[in-house]
Length: 228
Image 1 (cartoon, helix red, strand yellow):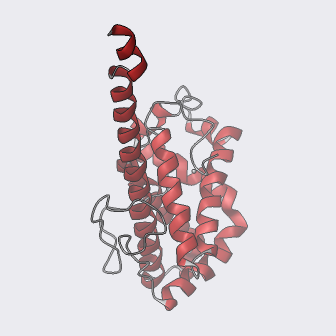
Image 2 (cartoon, helix red, strand yellow):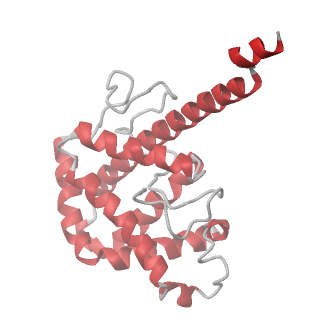
């Protein structure tokens, strides 16, 4: 999230907070997470709809035009805030775990690149607001890929919260309660879809592992004939 958000800077097999997420409660427009009941991203009958109104989509798109001008700085500040508020997250980034000086961390090119990957995912999401099926697939597949990096959904909450905290002072008077609610609803949807994708990949991996174990432990017909 390869993966637009996962990748360099994350130690394989360790949980990764480099995800897009949201606060646990994101307003009346948020879609409920009813569990891993989807097998394919196109299964619209079991996946939640995007519950942003046309007005909310417009507010997100308009505010993003302003934020896009400074996405590199937003990405850096977002992760610095993440490490300040959740210092345990830094330990899972093997490139950053030994950097205790936050000022030094701000100058890290690896962190800059990582922040830009997160911003890229947000940009793609905003661009797909009018194409719900593509937005759904984007977030669903991102969740699937995070399963490969063992980045569980509990980490998805953090980045969206920090994103909103960072962009408020940048937008100044353009940041209103309606704008904030619109962004929260979008992050809530993305988080829900990523969770579904993660759960889908997790279940598929479990089925594949069980099948492999069964094949490994079951004698083949040829070997049985040889024994007889």
